[in-house]
Length: 180
Image (cartoon, rainbow, N blue to C red; front, top):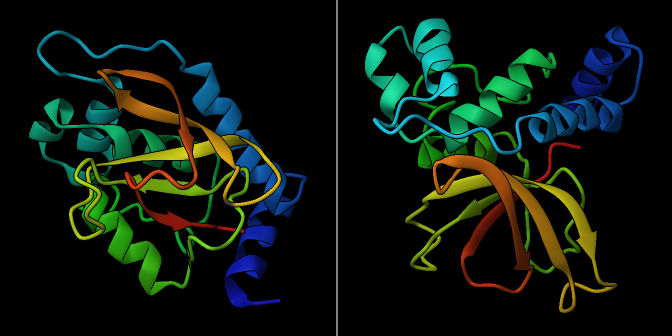
């Protein structure tokens, strides 16, 4: 078993479960926020939490908050800091998050079958070097990578917490990371 899985399992056992159980808690927390909407001025509770707790810079309260939503949920479910960045800007911006996760060996190839809890990074221009958004896979239907359809929960999807259904083969899925 590699070191990252050992660390995640240690954190999970601290809270009475497995690595998958810990990420299920994160997913459950994310689901509990479905329908949450940012204010008309762009302020979100996730940005405010990030501004107060991690960045110590109030402008984050009004920034795009898809990564900050993921970071908030990971933090409050005690995912270890070796598995998710609780630093600024890595825990607030998609490109920094991608670099942080990749440096720790979490990236998977698109030829693999997608799985529940995968972290999906999107590029609206289908350019893997230009990342725009992030979400966590709640479920996968289909039996092969070619037929897989993902149900992904996302913060800041149109200014709210919501779901996106997307084919695994969609070019807007730029990079994928698997924590367990």
